[in-house]
Amino acid sequence: MYNISLSKQDITEREISAVTDVLRSNALSLGPKLPEFESKIAGFVGAKYAVAVNSGTSALHLCVRALGISDGDEVITTPFSFIASSNCVIFERAKPVFVDIEPDTLNIDVEQIEKAITPKTKAIIPVHVFGLPANMTAIMKIAEKHNLVVIEDSCEALGAKVDNKSAGTIGDCGTFAFYPNKQITTGEGGIIVTDREDVAQLAISMRNQGRDEGMGWLAHSRLGYNYRISDINCALGVVQIERIDEILAARESVAGKYNSLISEEIPEIIPLCNPPEGMSRSWFVYVVQLPERFSVEQRDEIIKHLRSTGIWCNNYFPPIHLQPFYVNEFGYQKGDFPVTEKVSEHTIALPFYNRLADNDVEIIIKELKKKMNGMM
Ligand SMILES: Cc1ncc(COP(=O)(O)O)c(C=O)c1O
Image (cartoon, rainbow, N blue to C red):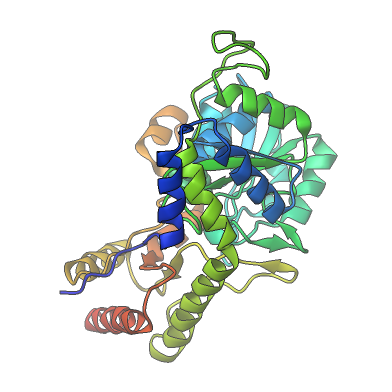
């Protein structure tokens, strides 16, 4: 029985010592590690402002609120994502309007966005799925033409680039997430990056119960939340972002090992695409697509088999529009977004993390190949 997990954080003695220092201090929350973490992230991505919060979902929610998206507004986004990228719109009683994806990049199909725009459309939320930026050049042109705001869900794409600009810094605002499966982790956490002072100020206030700077603890200017992130989490994040080059290189190297073994051993499998001209991918997960002749039941059987051998894998992503809540609430049904559905039925996320050993990648591919061959 193997024991290869799907993802794993990469924590060194430096992180442990930084967290311990905070624990020995008198500032577990709203202390000096919060602005330090924010300024390091802002510096890394090249944004004027960074506002750290307790999750990627909170970051998305505050972007939606700060941009004034509310009752009855429509927001165009992708159904092939993690559910938070469209739930954040529903929190404010607006409606996510899905547009299908491109079969190669797995990102929102920019050719189909304009057809989905109505007088109620207020925003676009492109998601940089699996760390590959969506076509931001086209999206920004459409947004400008139709006077829409853009929130980049960059939660999976810290370090990805579009024409030398960081993913997350091209729209009105962008978000990153720091759950332990992400490129860097704070345990739980997220951050908003933006060049817009108004968005940053509103986010700072709303993450902290609607207080404004200089106000007392029990004075509240607007509706707010407790979306604060502790200094313990931020101390972890500071060391992680300082290690970002090493982390991204390690991930790239593991992905390279998978790519070359797959092309030698199971060439009919479809790995994630190479980035289009001018873009780079920040490796988040290692997802492959099985050939079309495999049914969804067979895909699930492969996942079940790999798990039974101790190789942890998953069916990233089931389409959002087919989640029970979305079917009940909006009446979406099978067939609405055929590319998303087809891709979704064939994908498997294989174990992927910084220190995944070459030997383990070999085991994973050997077991996958054996199971696939046994199903022919
Ligand atoms: C695309 C995307 N958006 C949003 C999130 C939400 O982040 P969090 O889990 O930190 O709330 C995730 C996390 O997996 C994600 O992958």
